[in-house]
Figure 1: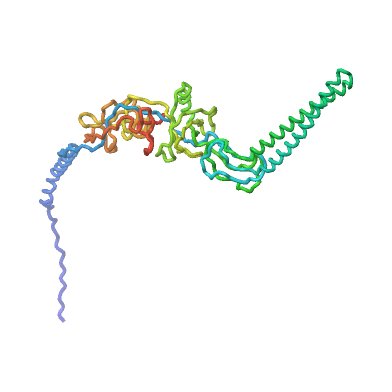
Figure 2: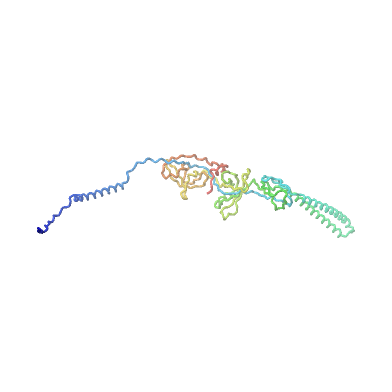
Length: 428
């Protein structure tokens, strides 16, 4: 077996490598970094100044004028009216009753008829009163005979007294008897007249002219004197309307009424569409109702066409004053801003501006303007919701209503209109 010698050798020593320089590519990238930062800063500054400058102005198309409807303020007349709620109250209402007791034998009227004063309405059985009259007449005849006999005796005693044929006392007693019989005769005559009156009361006549209501008692019933109501008659023409106004308006009405100025009153139906009648203020109540703050007034109406019916509810207008030559504008032109009123006025260059106004009397179609608008100026009535000061408008001018349209020269409203007559205003 051959043995190989183990050779040992020491490891070779390594030499230290010299330091290497950084890669040239990385050094080149770091060289451009400051320039990149400067470029970003310049870009940011440019963006900032562009943002401050804003977008470039655009050319916009001209705005079209706003279409509106306008009307001209004009001079006219307006009536100052006070509105109230009223009820038709007849001048006279009578409950027809019998003045005597007895059986109702006949009714001589038709329910709802217009009856005249003195017209016979019903008949009470007169036979008991006729029998009583006959009895009283018999008593009168007996007492008259007794009186005649007493007077004859008195005449005889008077002829015998001068000769002292009879005592003085006998003459005086006979004279007293004659006077007593005369008194009995007068009592009999009174009983006869009473019986005749009762017979007359059996015929029940209308105490006034008016409309009679429904029949309340049928023939065959026994009625009692002054307690059984047979019918009710109400006076239709003339009639009155009792209405109320607020206590704030009372002084204006009293001042006009105290001067003797006739104050017309107009009555309309419950829908305020038809004029039922025209009357005059008759009286003012002497107290104010503290629960409602109102006072009652009564107006008298001729009611020749029977358009006002008892207890009918009516709307009332009291004509307080008639203002002439005042500036009027349509109600639709008046706008409210809180407690202030204003109108949109169309300028000569077709732009609009607001004008504060002071409103006087207000009517159903037009109102009085005491300041802020001159006659002839155009005020916008439709399309105001799209306006702002300086807006260009294309105004379509509506026709100005005729002065006092729907009212006569005296301020009387026209009947049959859907509202109170134009030119009539409510008191402020």
